[in-house]
Length: 307
Image (tube, rainbow, N blue to C red; front, side, top):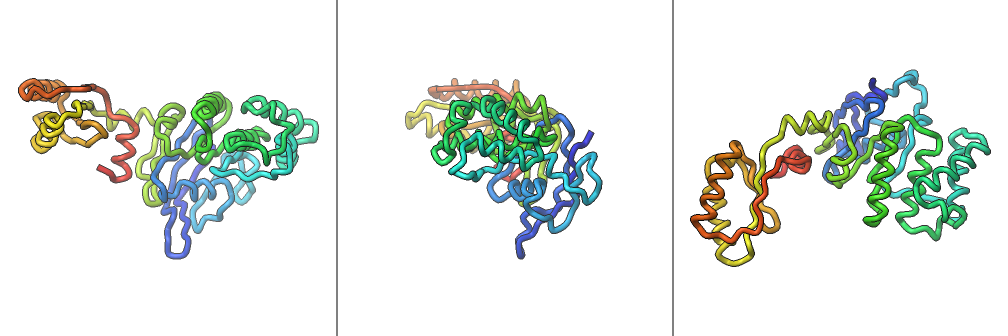
């Protein structure tokens, strides 16, 4: 069942059409990743969904909320760069947020203690927020977004300020949360989307370029891929440059990597045989030859128009 439905959503700033007729639905109990390069319209879309920007045109509907009724109480929101009252302690801030969301004083205090522990900053709850690190503030922002048990949790780059350990901990927490509520998050880290999401929405130039269940989209675009890396001697590099200009049968596309080439194959067996034969004939020193499948990154690059 659709929890949130977006139809023909448009946002203009002067002559700039930042969001151009976007439409999608967020099904209840799903985790959706909103992807796209900088300037694609992700944050503008999120701000309209959360009521921080008024759409130029289009419609946003929340299931169970009458047209024209304010649905923001159903949404928990964590912006990319959350702002806080530095003079408050973390616990005071969460209680304040809970009270603003309509919780009783007792419930706000209970939820605050619970969420501080859950996001990993329970020991810092009595410290002033001004002394928190960027990662601690991001965790506090996540707790704030959850304080009123929202039906839809909206997160804009939720792990962008975290170190590797903190990022892993918050990703694990998001994995738990998606079993409890519907989650929509934007990210530049495609691995995070693959790890967490059920559905993807890839934006390009203010529009949805690709959207739907991740597994279905993967299956539609799945192709075998060969990754070839040669050792760094001059002869191997020279051979690789020449070979890329005359790719063998079975290879339909190639792209350079930092130390080799990535090859999309029409016929995996034919491509593998041809590559191995030419490597042996040229006596090229191979560092890596790996066979796999196209990834979300391949789909993303195709959707946003990069080679």
